[in-house]
Image (cartoon, rainbow, N blue to C red; front, top):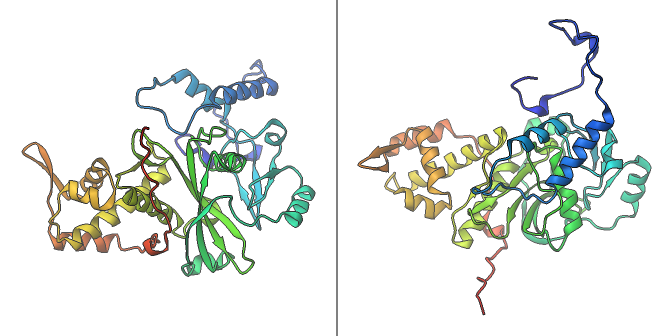
Length: 367
């Protein structure tokens, strides 16, 4: 659909097509093998790229166009993970034999991918791993699901857990996570070079004791641009539970404990832009109300770990900031803050600091 996100693309019956003009009889046929070769070359060319593009890097328009063309049509149509069958949104560069399948089976604990249902069922019966291969840093009671979620057949979890997974220590798991996530992220380019990254995996826990993945975010171990989130994803079947805001808040709670400010890598997707702007709005409004609007942009940044650029953009969207004598100044009264809070009153899930068992590592010093 022209002008729409590619995740909305779908296969349709020929009867639904209305041609403006007859197709040219002598139009050259498309060779599927040639398309496949282009996609494979492009995948190999980009395999060593990491999540972000450095500000100093040149933008290769021809390569981007080739990437757009070779990934235009998603290869995997459906994935089975746990008790869910989920429609894929985008192309993902799984190895050749797997990329040709219309349906893949994925273990929700190890994230290993399989082509056949029988292989998957045998794996599920024999696999003893029940959680991501990382450090448990967060555990809390799960909030009550909304009536809509329960009506849709989703089960109420007992707990939520978050694991910090080191890309250099659990390389295969993180590579599988990236390939799986690419089915739902359009411009993700990190597939195999996972060593420089940490992955924070959010899970639901039920009576069976297993930690069932519902989403994650990744971040660079060392970010020159102070990015505290590289990629973030809540799986489609678990969206609208508030998990996206929980992951975002976790990233900022970690930034606060590191004594840093942070921002997600840009550009943001359409869904990412909505989520982050909503999160920034709520956090900044609550901070302004607590201090009756008497805060500078710098003070807000130190308190919330949100960058001054993101603060300015958010407050501008709310008309709560003005440019005076060469600098941005917060212009707000408690009454106006309360009005905006009522307009943005939808409750969202947050990271409970008392449940977060994470401390910043000691700084690396040169010997």
